[in-house]
Length: 388
Image 1: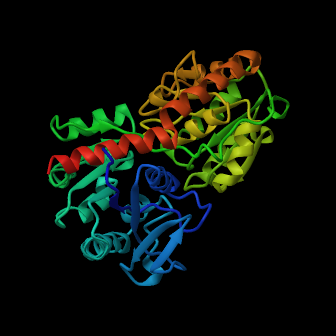
Image 2: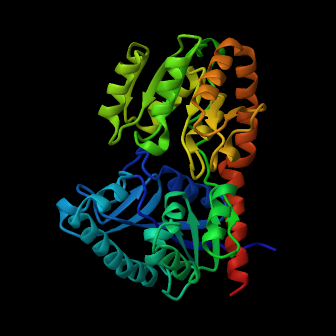
């Protein structure tokens, strides 16, 4: 029996602003993966300075809505929404406008596009906008929204939003458990986002360093770069480090590196587009992910696709991405000595590191490929629509 094509409206605050932009690229990757499953996707996202109301990004149509004066429209795309909202009265007012006008825009998009189903990415803020418009809604949580749900006063809001959804998903098993706890036991299925398998691939073995590590992430406390700098200072081997990312702790972390005497072994590369990340993964001995309560750890998947093993804290969704002793190394969260020991071990045993990297790619393709993830979500959509 031939299944019918579906129309799905994505509602999200994170989506690429242009081709090649890394912001929300995994949401775009899911839209592409669904095309092979006879699902047409249109995206509703907030506006930002320089963006047009109607656009097409890598073949996916995008509707953008205005929610504030242009100079205020900075909450989306940059990963700094929480910092902006907590830091000022203007940020809080802008968030209120985003929710109000986003909900109106979602209602208008449903009427114009006539989707079979609405898929909200993050229950907050997108799930609050996407439900109650006469079509089934599903929600995927990506990490920050579930952490928010455990905060003071947010649990009830999460439960009210989730009650409008026909199905709930989270991108890792750990995150699914966290969401279920916040919802009092309601089922939350695990369904990761697809990785960019066309972009991230292995290079020739002679391009890979034996002693240059890589960190990719926002420079804030949760990502744990301070722990990695301490591990450098403890290391038996003088391995070097490339740091990709920007954030509020950049200056403090650079001062910390100087104080620890490791700054000469570090290259601070700033924020880079996805296209620039692949060569870094390919040349690095290992990716180091010293973050805690990561929703999934997409950088670990990207590294795995390049046959680069990861050394990570055994925390959050990273345990879905890194299999200790098989595709990389996991150490207890916050244990700087163990982190330093694992990195030294990777430098001292490059043959094992290469074997872990090869196994990591095999596993990543089986679990996080667009084909696998697209089929998973298409089956979930069909189940929701059958249950109407």
